[in-house]
Image (cartoon, rainbow, N blue to C red; front, side, top):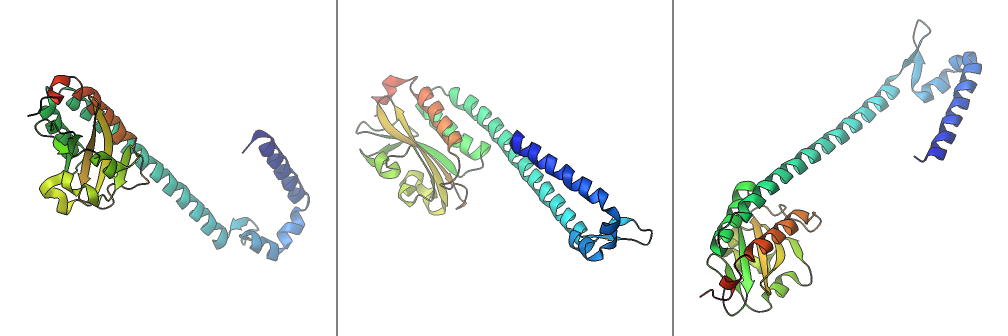
Length: 226
């Protein structure tokens, strides 16, 4: 609420309070109006909250508690994701060559994020390093179109996951570029809702850039994959 609007609201509230105080006796004698407010007079002539008011208060408290729990859950999930991401980055940058990098990407997927698998793939007639998959020219475009990231069911990406393809429910694909060659990093999950198009893609995009920078430490190997 903006400051001016809040000031007007507070001022109006004070006027209402003053009006109620000046007509206290009439207010206490109007049982119908008190009922509309959800309050009542007990035997000691003390205003008490009635069931309706208590119900509204309880509902408001429940909404506040539920909202707070959701915020706490999101905060815990974000913190856990950041921790796993930091550990994953350390694992990836310690790779000693392209095959080791591919192995580490798969281990990160399974051990850090509980996924089925993850693969690295490159387009090009010269093939791909051991542990990577080779894609035909234009295949990255077929998988991703103009997007950098694709999240959700990806039946056309089944070939990336080999024998695991039949049990892949959803996937996360990110475009990578290494040594001037187009490629893709792909994560696979068994659950259909593990990845969805409305989810944030910051994590997989960041890991894709880490993979790009790490893989470019051995440029000569990209041109001699035989």
